[in-house]
Length: 322
Ligand code: UT7
Image 1 (spheres, helix red, strand yellow):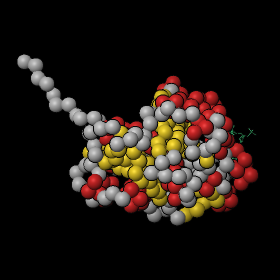
Image 2 (cartoon, rainbow, N blue to C red; image 1 turned 90 degrees about the vertical axis):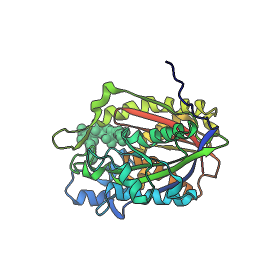
Image 3 (cartoon, protein in one colour; image 1 turned 45 degrees about the horizontal axis):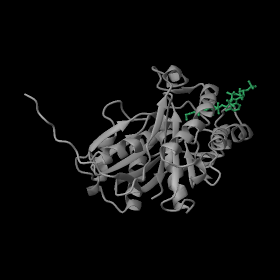
Image 4 (spheres, protein in one colour; image 1 turned 180 degrees about the vertical axis):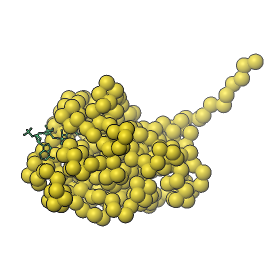
C-alpha cells in the first residue's frame, strides 16, 4: 500500500524582527590580564589581535546570559514568549553534555513546549542557527524562532595559554526570526574543513580549549573573503550594496583583511572585538545588536553576517536589518 504524507504549505520568506545582547559587567583590560601574571602585554594584544578589553562572567552562567540576551531580542521584536515555537541555542560551552540548554532556556523564558535544540558549530554557530531558523520558518515547521548564541568561554580557557587566554571572553546575543511576505534572510553559504579539525579543540581530559592560532589565521584570511562574496551573490547583491558587514570577532587583523577582500565599500564594519574580545557564537549577534542600538544600520538595510571557527566551519548570509 502506498501512502501520501501531508506536505507543508510554503511561505514566501523569513526575516529577523528583533536582536538583543547581554555582556557580563566585569571588564578585563589587557593590563588586568597582565596583573594576573600572564606573560603578555597590552601593546602585543592590541597590535596582533586588536583587543583592548573584554568581559568575563563571574556571576552569570551561560544560560543566564542567553536568557538576558533573549529577553532583549523579544522586546525589540515586539513579540512575546507565546509567539515562539522553536528555540535554537548555538553554543560550544554548554554547562553539561546532557541535557542541552535550549529547553531550559525556553522554560525560563516562559515559552511553552517549543521545539528546542542546541547547535554546536562553534564560532559559526549563530549564523548556522539563523539559517536553520529561516529554513524552519519558510518550510512552515515553525512560526517564530528564537535564536541565541551564548558562550561562557572562561569555563574552558586556560588564562595562561597565550593563544587563547587573552582572546576569549563571555557574552550572549539573540535574534527573533519569523515569517515575512518578502524575503529578509538570504540563502546561506556554508562549508567546513574537517581535515583541520584539530586546529581548535578542547582537550579530552581537561576540557581546556587549545588553538593553532596561525593555522586558523591563514585559513580564515585565505577563505573567508570568498565565502563573504559568495553569500552576497547568493542573496543577489554586490558587496558595494551592503550597508554593514558583521563578521565573527576573532582578530581585528582578520576582520580588516576579509573586509578588504570582500570590497564592501559602503558598509560599516563591525569591530566590536576591541571592547568585547572573542565570544565565539555570541560575537556576531552582540556586534549586530550594538550597531542597531547605536543607529549605525538603518532598518531594512542589507547586512552580511559571517561566522567561522572550530570544525573548521563557516557560514555567511545576508539579512535585512530589523
Ligand atoms: O574564534 C575562532 C577562530 N580563531 C581565530 O580566528 C584565531 C586566529 N588566530 C589568531 O588570531 C592569531 O594567530 C593569534 C592571536 C592566536 C596569535 O597571533 P599570531 O600573530 O599568530 O602570533 P604567533 O602565535 O605567531 O606568535 C608570534 C610571536 C611569538 O614570539 P616570537 O617567537 O616571534 O618571538 C610568540 O611567542 O608572539 C608571541 N606571542 C605573544 N606575545 C605576547 C604569542 N602570543 C603572545 C601573547 N602575548 N599573548
